[in-house]
Length: 159
Length: 327
Image 1: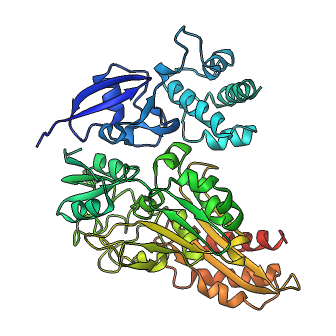
Image 2: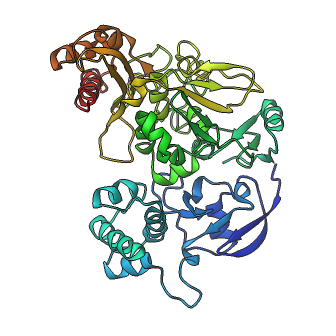
Image 3: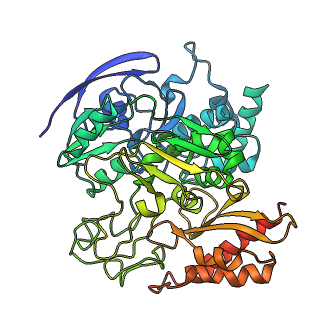
């Protein structure tokens, strides 16, 4: 029973229309249908955070979100973070400056999570950053530099 | 994941009707349902999306009670100023659950329907025996790796641990769950496995959780949630306790005490024996530690989870003593 349904998604300010099976996740729609491969597939079970995107400004996991479910919502992916002229978001710049990655696979999810973490007001101390960034795993263990990058970006965004 | 058809409900009534049909399941945050569909555990024929319903995500709090709309997000309830001041244990239980991303997706109504994390339940391709999944097929956990399994409320059929944080705090404060016509105590909403571990909730076809209500009390205002786990964050509990305390005017005699346990039981576990043993007593460490041991009455371990029988009373005692210091 492969029923197709037509859905309309607003991603990084652009409208997209696509036919999908209802079981298709937002993550697979982004990567396989819309060629937005910045959002990574890690565990595909909501345990690693690599697929973190924003829906209506809040960080969520694209792997456990059905594409059909977020019709009409504003979706932002890592591709939509920098300015139109290519100016990096403060968190992207801080990740570069602090060398907050090794292999880089978890990085888009880390950055999307960090942008939201700062916006939520949960980046006031290193302990709070560690707690509220706990949903993003880094198998290379770049955590000290990730915390440093979030701390730096939080200061820049507030000031 | 097997394919399914998708229905977006535009009213509570339409959602109830659609969900009552055979093979249909309600979809809220999706953090359990989509995950279990990928594992091959949940096999819905129809998914009824209720996330576009209006007005079901309201959070209202005053001194007498809190009402949480079923679709209120875990993160929003955790950060709500009224919940933090009148029901701190509820806020703490929520922000210590899962991750920030999952808490932004998961709803409090859906959270009550969260299934166990028993690895045998979650893995049908490697473990065909699971009474919760396939009634009568046996239990792969009994005789297996049991470090994360329950010691309270177990049966010959199932020892799966109930994983949720929120409900542990809810049962401590006599919260109720609204199902349309019926209103049940959260404690009664969750069922013991007994001979029917496949049935985890007292919910009927055509019913849907619309709200959770928590009565206010002095004990709820002075409450805390202590979660002990293998790593500091983003982990299920080895043992956890929601505790509320009210002292007499003398500042040392216990007038009211609420204790609920988690991470050790097959459902959210109210420890009334501990409460009764301590009411009217002067709060001191020896008395509290002795009484906390009563929480483990009837506990049965399966080897690797034996440590929980020692750990859980210490968690209860630490939580009560911590509250005693905050006078």
